[in-house]
Amino acid sequence: MKPQLKTKFLKPALEVVEPSFGSSFAYINFSRNANLKAHVWHYHPEVELVFVNGGSGKRQIGSHISYYTDGDLILIGSNLPHCGFTDDTTGNMNEIVIQMKPDFLGDSFMQLPETKSIAQLFTRARGGIAFGPQVRNALGSKMDKMAKQQPFERLLTLIAVLHELEKTDDYKVLNAEGFSLETQVQDNDRINMIFNYVKDNFREPIALEDVSERASMTVPSFCRYFKKMTNKTFVQFVNEYRVVHACKLLAEKPIPISEVSYESGFNNFSHFNKSFKEVTGKSASQYRKELHAHLE
Image 1 (cartoon, rainbow, N blue to C red):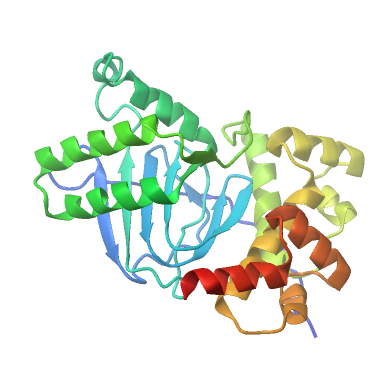
Image 2: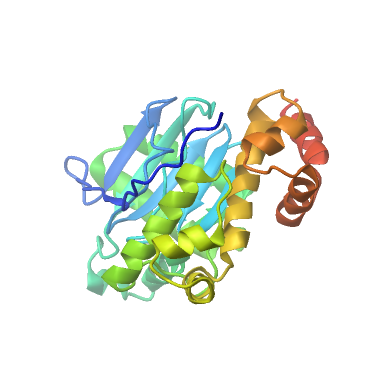
């Protein structure tokens, strides 16, 4: 018998960030399995740069949900809600988190001809940015070396890393243009309630009528509202969340694909196959085969 649906909804928690000693920004190098925040939905005014050194896991940033393999390099804009990227099954070597105020270099400095592109990078990061493997490997190693640098040298390295991130074309903005959770308080509370509801209950059937009622809206009004806020339909969002969880199970557990389908909230196997291909561009069996070939 499946558990009852949860009815308690949590807003994203405000994380208070303190700069590292002698620095204008926070730099933390976590050893493997030390930063277990994959379940924590939070936000902060600081821009966050995260390097996951190896391993695989789930990204949830704003309304975007995806699964990464072989590490990750992510830039998250100011006040963009997100979950952590690692848990005890990720298998990463370490994780580096750098958090800085958008104006940590000073407004005048950020308007210099040599540095104003960094301000543009921070603006682009409002949707969340994932960088490709070449950039990830090259800059991840620079971020790793910052652990042994003195504050001034560490600052210069960070500026150089941000400059390289701004120059590269090897990136993907994760949330559609125009997406932002920096809305009116009422909208913020409502959309966060919906995200938490899906996160807690995606394994169960989720009826539009039920979630519309929880949002105190009619079904048509809710559908228009959700599309306006996230640039995707609610059904699309739920299916993407379930498919990403299926990707995680395919990578981490040697269980039959039919069981992966059920554990991810799909009660209809043909619907699972169709949704999986729509989101990933391949079948579940092909995805698992290619992933294992890549890891061998």
